[in-house]
Structure formats: C-alpha cells, structure tokens
Length: 397
Image 1 (cartoon, rainbow, N blue to C red):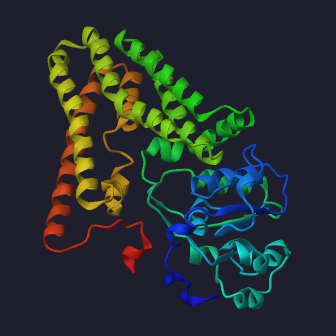
Image 2 (image 1 turned 180 degrees about the vertical axis):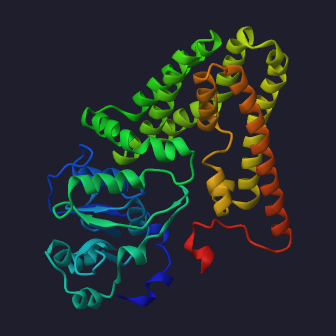
Image 3 (image 1 turned 90 degrees about the horizontal axis):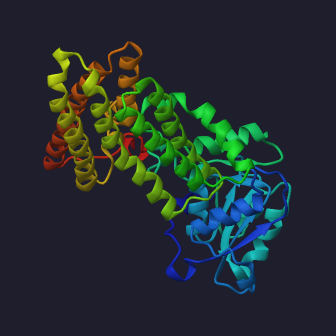
C-alpha cells in the first residue's frame, strides 16, 4: 500500500463530477435491488454522474466499480471524492473500485476485471492503492456511531450477512433503548417485506402519521390501553421508514423533512392528548397536579430541544455523542419512546394519571442532566479544551 495516500487532498473542482463506470455484471439482488442499480443510486448521491448517455470516454475522471462487490456508504463517498485512488478488498488482492482520469482507465480496468489482482502491479500504476480501513472512516457522524468500513463480495457472502451488514449500517448508534434494542430484528423483517413489494419510505411515513393521529384521538378519549399499541406501532414504523430509505438508497430531502418533521412535532400533542383523556378519570389527589405537570412536560420538551440545539451550535457535535455518559443517557432521556414506556407501565397497572406525573418528573431530571452537561462543556471550552465525540477514533489519537 502507498503509505502517503492518507495525506492526499480531495479532488479539485474539475473532478467533482466524475462519470460512473460499472465493471462486470451481477444478478444477486439485495433488498430487492440489483447491484448495478444500487451503485447508480449510491454514487449519484455521492455526486457522481451516472448518466451513461453523457459518458464519451474523454471525461476528466471516472469512478469505476465492480458490479459484484458491495461497498459501505462511507467508502462510496470516499472513492467518489478522492482522485487517483484504487480501492481494494481488506486483503488487498482484489481491486473493487477506482477514481482515475478517464484517459488512464485502461490502466486499472484489467485489475478490476481480474479474479485476483497482483498488489505489486497495482502499486506500479502510480495510483494510491488503499484498503477499506485506509480509505474509509470508522466513525459515522451522521448516524452517531462507530462503523468499520466494509467491502463484501456478493458471490462469497450470504444474503443474510449482506442484509445484516447493510441494515446495521442504516441504524443510528445514539438513540433510545426501544429503537436500539427492541426494534432491530422485527424492523429488518418488515423492511425486507416492504422492499420486496416496492413500498416507498414515504408511504411508510404516511402510515405512521395516520397511526399518530389515531393514537392522539384515543388518548384524548381516555382509551389508553387501546391507544398504546397503536402508538408503539407508530414508533416502529418510524424506525422502518428510515431504514427502508437507506437500504434501498431512496432517501430524499423531502422524505427527511417529512419523517423528521413528524417526529419533532407530534410528541407534545400526544402528551396534551393524554392530559385531556386522563383528567376526568384521575384520582382527586392527583388531578390538581396534572395541569402543572402538563406545562412541565410541554415546556420541558421545548427547552430540551433548545439545549440540544445550543450544544450543536456551540460545539458542532450532538450532546448525545460527546462522552459515554451522554451516549448512555440518550437511551433513556425524556424523549417520546422512554416517556411512552413510562405511560405504558402506568396504564397496565391502572394508573395512567400517575404515569403522567412520572413523565413530568423524568422530564425535569433529564433537563437538569442536559443543562449540567452543557455547562460542563462550556467551561471546558472556555479553558481551551476541545469538545469532541468519544466515538471518533481521532479523539483518542
């Protein structure tokens, strides 16, 4: 491997839109998507021109990729942005992708078509020859997690393993305990089912919106035991739509706004609906505390989001990925799913009114935690310290 390759700079503006060339064929579908189409969608999102009709063989640069290999999302972005580079398998004996000047495509085409590539010959091309670990990153800032870059052969890897890898790559690291530990297995099954039927992520989001409104109506009527399964089904579909978008490479700006907009707006309405429904049936000793609890929950939700926003604005990272304690607290902090878990337990024991007070109490505790963490980060920053994610290996280097 060329050890100086890490220091090379990204491509210059003229190479910002290289053309995609898919080498070979592969008919093994993953998430009901053919490898060539997956490459086209993935590289298009990375800024590569995938329109074959516009490729005349004399373009400034090309990104050539084998059809029979699956590349992790970070590697697709990396190879698209880095000129004069050849990506190999982990072992370094198979070339799977390259970003090279169009005039020199033939120099690497033989290696990309070969069953095995001679590392010596690859190095003699003059290009930076890099393994997945060298080219990619083990830290995914967008999904807030550590994720080793991967290159996998479609023919040598089982579909189950390919699904596991791509589905895992679509999952956020810092999230609540329900999404993190309860939903992955069933969500993968439903995501596979939806992909096989061509169901769009936005259709799943629309169904989750319908369930959001149904649950809200049932909350206001005091039908908590009927509403809770519907509310949990909504949170499940809220997991599925994002995963479906990522594994089928169909995410869009509108879909992101649609999904996250619903996520951001609906929780306060749910808690208000719970208040309306529980007030008539609350015990006299609790009823007088429900309205103050409502204001604590609603104001706490807003203030909590503001504290998180201030952390990002001040330190350019989310508070949940700063240190391990923040990462853990994200699993239980007073967001929708942990709050819904409190209300579920309270309703099952016949005290939805006490559950509402429990959510208010947990909201206060969560606010105190996040306020303290923001203050601690500010003090470290003022003293010249750096606020960086513990998940990023460069933080420990």
